[in-house]
Image (tube, rainbow, N blue to C red):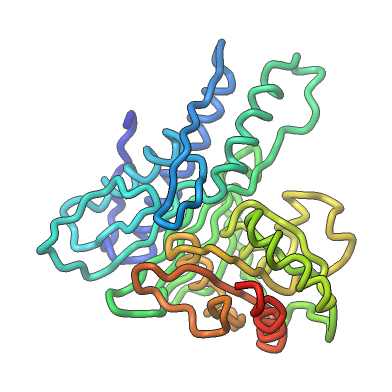
Length: 322
């Protein structure tokens, strides 16, 4: 791990500390990828990992190092990192006062595709370059108290949505859900009741091939348009932050509102941050079977919807296919 992050001058359990750490980690990732793309012979090493259920997914050195950097900023504190890559140790007999569920690069497959596109883009003469590629992969963290099912805060960062810096989303005690642009401007996210939600129809996002395969047809039969975005964090944010999907895939929505996201496999590190935002904004949140989305180890699925009626309709549509 080539670069350590500085420890912010805030309490380590706080949103302010977490936001600063995750922002540093994401900005370091962004800079390193840019430097890699500009190198003489750019390459990205991708390995394949298999989870306990037998599902495979890609992992890169950048995933592991980003999680290591975040974990290193909490060494010596009572904050435990529960990360996707599992690279941060924790003594068996030590009690945590806060667990931070970390996804160092949510949407690694999307990230790998983006890096290859960036390599090709960077090799073109500057005069011939089209607009710089973008990517919805996110660095995500959500703080959850032990034995709680309600995330306390979220710090989520998009390193590759804008060419001139990171875009951040956070929420926490006394802090409304907000998006922070590279220029520092802050934009409060709308509450769920402020978002457009037709009586029928609208777009449901899915974040994996398996969710598209199993849920796509039933959701279409229920009257929804289904689109896939290969990042659970980005998909959930798109359901809560109007305009984000357009920034990632311009023109594809065609004016249809995003009314929810159905995630067949959504580990705690995938959703701790976005559920903190969803709860703050008044969105419907559940597991795919309609039960409350809890945060015990092994919890695995989520639905976020603009209205409870939409969330229940999604649950009903996909129930035979769980």
